[in-house]
Image: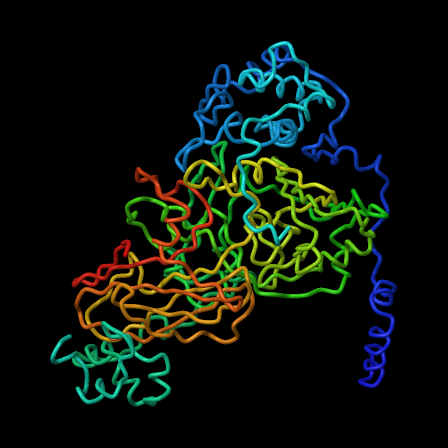
Length: 176
Length: 441
């Protein structure tokens, strides 16, 4: 235990040496981990495509997977069911407009990211990367945002231009 | 105003300074008047003493009581003090549990009543197997166990957590008749204890290119949100304790991110991974859900901040007044910008205002309990509270907010979320029967 006098000198030392002194005294109990050990968790996709894995899928392949694993909640052809529609949508006018992928989502990469981390609802992380690409392609094709034969992969997906990408106002730019 | 209030002395009432219309008294009226006067003020007491009853020993005073449990449970008479559930059978959609503000008092929320939103249920996490990984734009990726984090220097702070969609029913074009729990139950306040995020990020070594971090939970949807690195280095915390005990499962057991004053959804629960990046991830929740649409069709992105807000909890719908006399108007105020500097209360729909007493200590980004003594004369009254924060922001009127943000054309369900980030004034109307209704004024 420090005496009062000793604690005072520690404060002075910290002031002189600044953060490097604090760092030297940090517990340093984090265990180094190499990127290969994080792979199973490393699932963030950025809008520029960073993080997209190898693999590829087409709308036709996606349609088959969709019927088996998605349509019970999201309806046939993405028309909606107990859960949200994935196709269509009227232009956004006000707060009562339904936000859909086609009329609202600013980046196509979000579709891949969200399916891979959260879907299907009861079996998240159960889809192979090719299947996620195929479902992403199917949804984009349903919304006529890509052609019905366009394959989605790490190169093509970030290039898909979403109609509402320019529809946003950053609320507090000084917070970023 | 009644000519003959049911109190001990007309003179005592007149000594009390009415500071604003419809019976609002000075916030320090009791301190000024002294204890004797305070006794005279309580109309209830006087009414009851007029029909004084014989005091007797009740059965619980005549025999030893129950065994003390190893984990305390509240009185069986308090069983109605519960959260309301939007999805009690865990159907495959989001679950909301709302805090009963009208049945609580003080400034923090008990753990069992803290609001919870779970997008796919609460995971059952074994704390010994849980890991927190920090990677991406860092010099050395690191992984932490709960045991390891428990050895770090800790900090405690009171902070409110508020869903970005709290109070969304007030976007309705017509006031929805519902309790303060239904309208404002997606905000709570707790003391969180844990490790500063900056400590862990510095240990990993921040690459100068990093501008954001993406935080992710270990829940089934692997919920993820992007956070500006500046916030992470300012006051972010990895919380391990909630009001002194380990986090509740619904609040992120065994660890969660706490971003004081920022949108609840960003305070990632069951936190398992933090990746430092140059860009935000534009995850589902930031790209779609928490992007409120403005009139005309543009939408706000990266709202983040929970702005200055207050609402009256006592009285409020469901808490009827039981006859004219003294009541304390009280509620909570909070701001993501810092401390509450002032709360004003009106009993005449905003025509005149009385400054409320603020419960010390007023803490930054935490609930501040405000109180105003009120003499209800039995007539119609329209109650409002309005808060200011130390950054100089004033809580808007509903008219001011709706002018910018819009409102619905139809009345939405009370559990719906027509938009987010509603922080305008809430109005309660008291009728002559003492019933309290939600109105717009």
